[in-house]
Length: 219
Image (tube, rainbow, N blue to C red; front, side):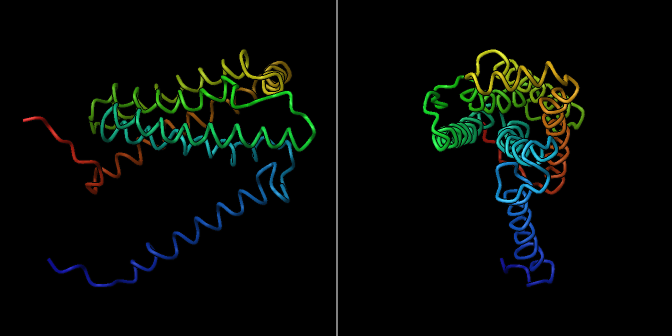
């Protein structure tokens, strides 16, 4: 079968969109990220935290979530193990290095159970979404499964941060809830709720164009 002829839209798909993504990631990492070189919004700005760290967590959880919805619970769980594992290792290493650079070596974030739950929650969100949706392309069912999985994992992570995280993270979480509970709710749950809404919309659009894993059935 002869491939499609080259079109102007191919330039947009192949060059313009990737460049836009590169620029967006660069801006978020350097200018918005509270630990970035310039952090123009400030080192403790909540919006900056949500746009960078919150966005990163949305990506980590979003991949297994969408695979759970479009494929099955096993694909979602497996993707969660990979994505969550990478995020756990990267985050723990980052904080170990950050505290070591300040001369603090008392904390080993690789042993922080709350950080390990980034991996666990990534597995849970993909598995739960797949279990609840059962491969259905009905948008309401996909939305319900997605929101249930996203909110459940957000509650688990908030509990872990508040109760079992290493002292720096635990104190930060407890102070956040004590001083400004409304903002604590925003930080802990708004990104997850947004994820639970955005992913099924994206998944539904993908089904319209036939962009979904092929299901294999035993003969």
